[in-house]
Length: 68
Image (cartoon, rainbow, N blue to C red):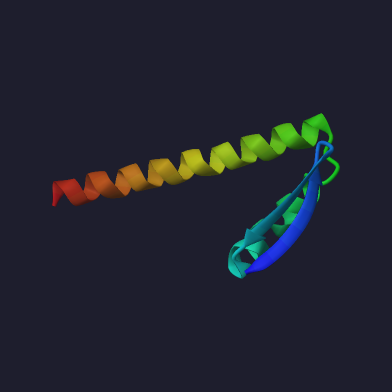
């Protein structure tokens, strides 16, 4: 586990993350340290797009499994 401190929009947070997950989100955490509104918007949209695409893939897999 990795304990980190970060500041987002003037608020300070201390969070604990699994090492692998920290490596996965490290770049995004750095981006939100001092974000512009545009960077926050793109980060949110990027995240939602990834979730949307993942959900589509899962639904397709489930449909294929149901047909068998």
